[in-house]
Amino acid sequence: MKASRFPAAATGLALLVLLAGSLLLSLLAGSVALAPRDVLSALTGSGDPSAVTIVRELRLPRSLLAALVGGVLALSGAALQALLRNPLADPYLLGVSGGAACGTLAGLLLGLPAAGLLGRAALPATAFLGALGAILLVGLGASVGGRLDRGRLLLSGVVVNALASAVLLFLLSWGDGARTQSFVFWMLGSLAGATDGAVAALAVYAVIGLAALLPLAPAFDALALGEETAFTLGVPVETVKRIAYLAASLLAAAAVSVSGIIGFVGLLVPNGARLLCRSNRSLLLLSFVLGAILLVLADTAARALFSPAEISIGALTALLGAPAFLLLMRRRA
Image (cartoon, rainbow, N blue to C red; front, side, top):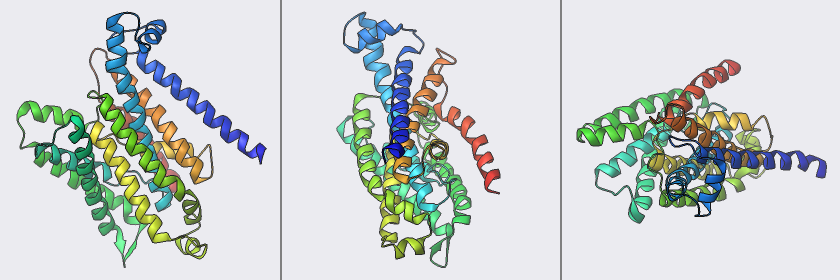
């Protein structure tokens, strides 16, 4: 038993060290270059006042938010892939992110604040309602004889994504020019508005998601053998499916409400984590950490590559994810 646990523990420790290094790099990089000594001093509240402001008020909340967004999106994707037994499942491809974006934008247009305690609680709720609506539409399109046809799932997700894009464009047509421009940049994926409050709120959703999904890991292992086999092993299949769908939707919706649409994280990361582990419990945990690392590095690149200009983080993840999606489809063909 000890020999089998050591590699998993070593892998987890190595990834945590890599995450810490990624966070440190994100604090160093930007339009204003800072030395490691300046960053460490600023974290303790000492040193140059401008460096303290840059690190503690701007870069640190953004880096932590990037880690949480990447973690919850990867966790959502891992849960959907385990539940549907399809490595191509992803909250973005299944229309969940698009539905959540519609819910968030609708909440903002209805006058819900984007900041403050009310906004941090209400916007994820409207995003969650939009995500649930997207899941219902995807399920309706992929259902055959009352059962979910996994072969039609991705096609149904593409259709719902197109519908969500149309709804977003319709909602955006109501806003003024300046507001519409800010919404469009948000839709493409941006962490520019990161705050301590957003970090704290998303951390709560991440804990809820982990608490809901980790106990389902043995059921996911059984579902890999087929729903009928899982049922004979005593797994309450329908209950597990409902909880997993709701938890994955809540995670994706909470991420979208603070960062906009960032695609392919939930697709790429679980497939990478699957190379390092076999059980779904390890897969869920590793996906969370790997997703955090990926998005912290992507956000750092988005800020630093063309500084002082900033590119969309969603564009970077799409550049990585779209070719990987094609490769995964070819492997399954």
